[in-house]
Length: 276
Length: 276
Image (tube, rainbow over all chains, first blue to last red; front, side):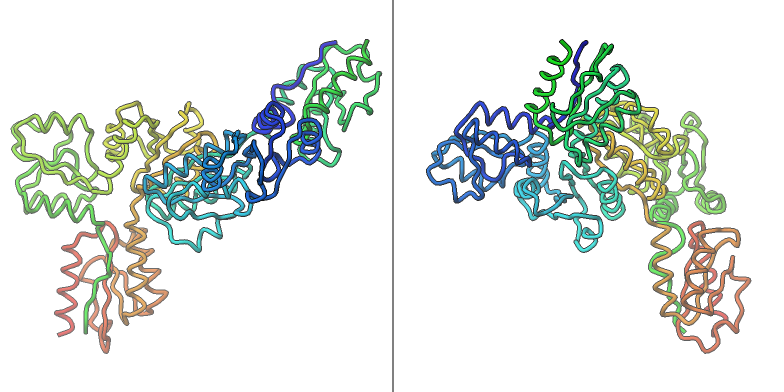
């Protein structure tokens, strides 16, 4: 029986990249958690001595610092660069992109609008790149309280819904002469869904790995089940049953966005063991 | 009794400007009608010898040519410039604007999308300024048949509805990385409505001039009537009645978008005559 992973599954590209950086660097410190997944943060601490401090001022005698996936404020990055600390940037490229856009557009005279949660580290980082005061809004209603210039550039927090973003863009289109709309929304969730849809059409058994309470994993399972009746949603390898794989040719694997690779690998090893 | 015209009424800015140009120049020829109003075209022909030819090739021995409010194709303008014909450009500045945007954006590598009627002279002119093949669409559904680049700049025909434009922008936002939205819609109709709303709140009699079948004139009358009970919708001065103006202090005047100034002036003269 062939075992095939979906083209896109589990952690998104930016998170995988950050974990790889942290593992390779070892003994480094991140300001704020590297990613939003405690189990993985604990593993990195245990196996690779990757520590987390809450704030910039707690770095103390730290030698190596990793910039978290969400990025940090420009002024803090500059302070870090001036220090003796070795810096490795694990900011997700999908977050670096709006940072660069905001910097360039604000220098070109555009009023910057950031559509996102002003308390989220990603948004704090992105807004800090504007050379003029940016407007940060969580919804279109908040925008109505602001005076808007005739030239506006807008970016969205990577996890925002496109339909909500369109509402904000619609409003801006109606009141300004030029709106530069940058679609900075990351499609990772949708990419996982597209990939499981494709794989489940070919496979005769599908294993979807992720928390039973994880809504994005349940969504993956639902899509898989539509195409492949022998689809199973499990949290870890202990739930696997030998009979699921009898007389099967292709076993497809997918995982929710909060499922680390090492849990997936354990599942795959166990399937191989069962099927011998 | 004071007679006061609304801040905005009748012909839009671009049409008024073109008529003034044609009157001052005299004996000139326009390629295609200068504006979309036959009565006014006839008056210009009769009083100022302004002739209209259908096509570029019919100019013959013409000495002076006026570029119509809707503009013309770039290549035809260039041909005209190379000829001995004196050219006066009466293109509405609100139309010159999208022409310039399309030229600049296409040179900067943006895929040009023009939202409008491809048969309309304005759209024919605007699209001709793109140095790369532009996409012209009348609605969002038509856009779905096109392959779109990652960088798009969009302009709208000046008379398009903003709500329809937003639908097109929403679609582009969802499928491309950058959309530069230029709001090139002209608000003349809404400006007339805003102005009649304001004036009718002050006036104690309102005269709204325009065709009885003109929907934008009826809309102006409706707004006026909401604020000033003594509002009257007339087509010309022959309908005025003396009693309308008895014991009145302020007479407000507005007119539909297809009402020439000379009709409005005749009405005002007649009101003055009546009230003596």
